[in-house]
Image (cartoon, rainbow, N blue to C red; front, side, top):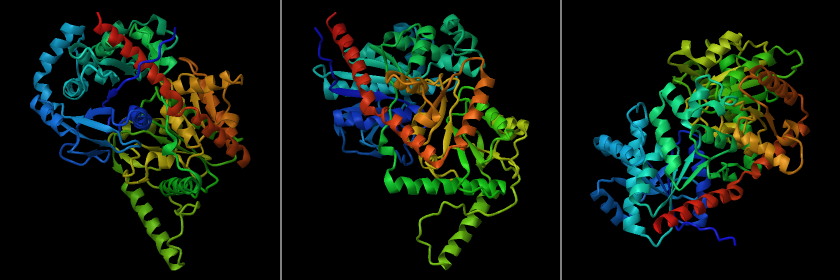
Length: 581
């Protein structure tokens, strides 16, 4: 007889990226929050690190009236918190905790962790201590709140994201066993390290021993906390089937549930707003390109981009640039292609000559519009910049601290890509966070995404892949690979419908087969797909854009949230069984 699934009365979620926008987990949490908030109003609490004690955090709005008595009690217990709302759809409750005071207890905390769960912290370095003290503080927050505000008559779930929060999950397992614990790894630390160090991951995955590789790659402590958390929580989860296989081989633990990452369409403008913002984005991209390179690219230019973390091989930046080099030597290309590389690097601020040229052109355009009485008009698609001399370094929008050791600019120079006006393919490196205040574009990532025609994410290591999902949600067709969780899911959607695998012109997505050793084939395939896309008619492009958006509709949280409820049920049942032992 099937049992009704158990549902939580209260959910805590802990992540380094709560009110701290540094990576893809921020997107997971911030887009899913409204779905959970609608189901459990103000019974979902996110816990994040308090980095902003003496300055304003634009993502966090403090509410000193919320849970005043508990906040005072927690402070008396040595846990300093600020309580408020996360400034995202749903505006969920957030507790930001000051973890720095716990550094004084670090050795005792690590000792207890070894005694109870055999977690090796002896080899810790880098961000391990900081993440672990935050994780411990988050566990203390939950322990205090549970005893003061909830109690054992409530079904409570604590979900910890990535190895950085593993210590807190184990603390709760030991000290508040009535709380059901869930651990989600979005990418195993050792798998990412194997791939990032140039070792073949996939063909030899069955032969790797996670502990041995952690010793070899100096990842012992991160691997240890991740592995022990996976084995000791009530429910272990990951984000895709490709990562589930990795967990089984490297952590010796099969995930209980796969939690695919969804998206909320609230982030995507509609109708006239979409059209206007796309026009504005294209104008800005072309203005920057023309000012930088001394060109006169028009709105007919095919604008392509890749983005994400600066992981040269894992994100496929290497194969993307190789493909663009192949494309620029293809005589069949009869259209200008502007390719962007939007990955934050070690940059030292915007190029001053580029900024000055953009400011001068903008001022000139404003005066011209004012003379004609058109100052209030919406921006036009035609670029403002009309110059004919390239700047000193026409491949990069920002200064780099060590340009001689930068891999993107090094590859562009090696390929001889100098953005000469005669070249049909021009490549620009944008080594900054697109947060609206980068000094050149001064637009947010999503706003610039609207202006693209095509994106390329040829990842070698990509547990899920938010960048391609975001791309199709914003009606921008994309290329991805079979080594990305999103790519596998996209093909699975087609297979479940009894249809062939995804095609760029038909589905708005193309999933390129990728392995440990087919770099050249992938590069040639990307070059060919960009060439083919450049030749599509406007009607065919519009169909591809609509198909991309339709695929993204299937990845909304309203479809994927059921997997979370499955995880809640598993965790709660195991916690209840433990209580009766």
